[in-house]
Image (cartoon, rainbow over the protein chains, first blue to last red):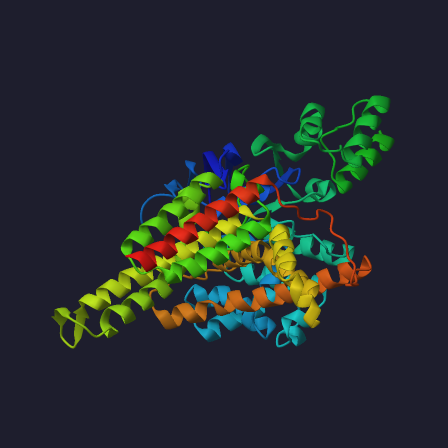
Length: 281
Length: 266
């Protein structure tokens, strides 16, 4: 699925005297099977931006095209767009409303028009995929632990089998174990062909998982580029107020000292390989 | 959407009305309320309307912003219109099957509707120009005399200020949960009224849960900072009447007198 975002502007609080832009002239493309991280300070417009991608917010000007069709065109079925572009909000476990895990997860599938039976079967499958075992299915969702709740809530979106999965700070408030489990699930989905877009403040996760990075600052997109290029761009990082991650720092220092180090290799595994190779040579 | 509710929201502006003492504004709303029920002639309604417009102009709040509050009132308004229009006996103007519209009914309907609209607009002017903090301070000061009867006025004031403070937070929360459920394909605009009522379950449960969670957190935070309601709590900004308040009271008094004169004399 190809999503084109073209020059969108969004004004906050249209009634007030001075216009406050939440998004200003934002453009970028999302291609099939991308893994994109959106980074930037709080209040830079990240959450507002992702809410445009499934049509929850409507841009005041500009256009968003999904597979060539404008989502703002007349008679466009926004509801079915939301099944294709799944959006997981921050703290998604706050939206639980059912008395069992399984019925809460089924909600999305039922809204798509699947029968009760089918929805239940789909929910079971997806719950197993995210690592929730069968004995939890009939539990009261509010009684689960934080990590389990988050997984169930994310399953509630994944059950619709969206092609694009957007997550707003999925790791917020999770313990390290739950977090790495969650990211593993997401990475597996990505390998199966899903497009993943996530907002995060954790640069280590960005480096490990994302292929591309969208850098935002003051309602504008500063840069859309490959992860390694973004973190090696000192000017960009200081402009966006982002501290250079240790991995990048390490590779730069190694390169200064030993030369011929590929500073674009910043994932944990790549770094180790690069160092091992250097020693062997 | 849900953000259209203006009741209990504050609109930041530097205007004469904003800088009035909250007691003045609360009293003005009370007087206005009482006065509007004294009124029975269209001339007086015109005057009440002019007074309202005058206050809105002074407050520098855009008219559209104030009238948005009426949206949530449409149902109540329609109900009162229907009942008054068809249920009042008198001289029949025209018949409509078993329904008949009378001259008196029409008259009453228009007046009732006007009354409701004017009251809502004037009281939303109070909340739009007064921060929740000021508002509760004002109410607390106004009701201070009840302390003599051992009524826990400061507790009530605190409860009110918390409740008011929570309105915008809850509105935001509703907005967020609504969006989250819409992302899972929920529809809140179904034409079928039963389906529509059902569609609100995924909204109401999380809202109640989060309201309880928030109030729990707040209670804990207050206790952690040793909040207690001993008798002699002092205020950060004690209320003082200023010159403008006197002028406002004079205006209000004049308005009231004219209305009374209009009622009695003609």
